[in-house]
Length: 388
Ligand SMILES: Cc1cc2nc3c(=O)[nH]c(=O)nc-3n(C[C@H](O)[C@H](O)[C@H](O)COP(=O)(O)OP(=O)(O)OC[C@H]3O[C@@H](n4cnc5c(N)ncnc54)[C@H](O)[C@@H]3O)c2cc1C
Image (cartoon, rainbow, N blue to C red; front, side, top):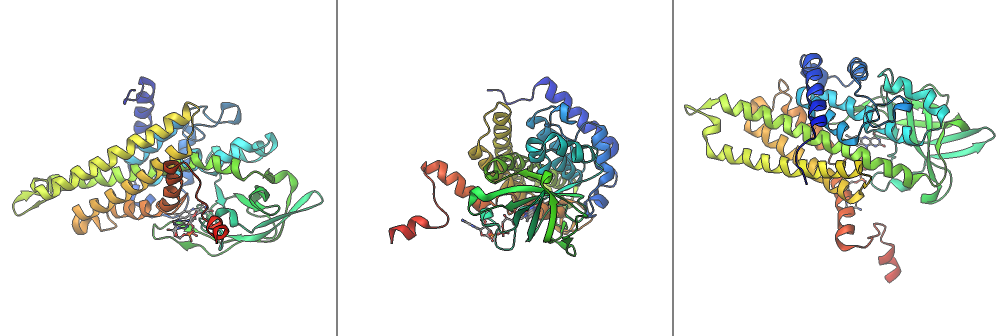
C-alpha cells in the first residue's frame, strides 16, 4: 500500500495547478456568482487536455484514468472552485455515460462540441414523482415508425438553462426493465424549457417539458433494460461529486486557516485560541479521512474493481466532510466568512446541495447498510406487505 501519488500523477497535478494559477486565479468570485455555464473556461480546459480525461483517445478524449480526473478537480478547485464544475461536466457527468454507450454516429454528432467546450449536456432523470425512487419515472418514449414520441416532465437538471443537448431517462414499458435513455436536442419541437429557478447554491435549472416530442430512433442511447448500465455509469459521476465536495471543503478550510492566522482579537491572532485550534484539528481529521476513502474508490475503479459500496462510502464521507468543514470555516471567519465577498459561504452552499444530489446521503447509507448486513432491504416495503 502506498499513500503517495506516482511521479506521473505529481507532474500532472503540478501542470494542472500551473494552468489554473495562470488562467483562473483572477475573477474567481465573479465566476462563482455567475449561474451561466463558463464556456470560456471550458474551451481553455479543452485546449489544456482537461476534458474527456477518461474518454478513449479514439473518441476524442485523453485516455487517462479516473484518478487523473480526480486530481484535475482538486487542483482546479484549489484555485477557482467554480471552474471545477467544468471538470465535472467534461469528465464525470452525463458525458461519461454518453461516451460509454453511444453509437459511433451519436458520438460523431455530439462529442466534438461537448469535448471542445462549445456545448454542454444536461441529465434529465428526476421527475415530480420520482426523486430518490428514480425507477418510478413516468416520462414515456413510444415508438412511432422511425421515431419515438416523448411525453413527461423532468426537474432539477444541472446546466439545463445552457445545455444544447439532453440525456433523458425514459420509460419504454413497465418496470425497471422498461427504462432506458434518449438524447434530445434543445430545439426539438415538442420540447420546452420552463423559466429558470434557483437553488440555494445559486445554480439554476429549468423544468423540461416533453409534449409529443418526436425524436429520431437514432437518438436512443439505451433501449429497454438500460437502467442498470446507466446507473453503473452513475457511480463514476458520484466520484466526481465527492471530489468536488471535498475540494470545496478544503478551499474553505484553507481560506479560514489563513484568516485566523492573521486576524487579531483580544490582542492575539485568532489561531492562538485553543477553541479555534481544535476546530481546525477536527476539520483536518474530517478532510483527511474522506480523502483516503475517495482515493480508494477512484484507485480501485481504475484497477477494474469499481465498487458501488466504496463509491457510496466515499461520496457520503466527502459530502458530509465538505459541508461540515465549509460550515465551520464560515464560523471561524465570523461575518467575513458569511459575506459574499469571500467564497467560503459559497462553498458551504454548494457542498450542502451535494448531500441531496446524485444519491442523497440517506440513499447512500441505505446502500452501505445493505453491504453491512449482506442483504437487500426493499425500500418499497414489499416484504412488510407480504408479511402482513
Ligand atoms: C444541486 C442539485 C443538482 C441536481 N442535479 C440534477 C440533475 O442534473 N439531473 C437530475 O435528474 N436531477 C438532479 N437533481 C435532483 C436530485 O437527483 C434529487 O433531488 C434527488 O434524487 C432526491 O430527490 P428529491 O429531491 O425528490 O427528494 P426525495 O426523494 O423526495 O427525498 C426527500 C428526503 O427523503 C430522503 N429519503 C427518500 N427516500 C428515502 C429512503 N428510502 N430512506 C431514507 N431516506 C429517504 C431523501 O434522502 C431526502 O432527504 C439535483 C439536485 C440538486 C440538489
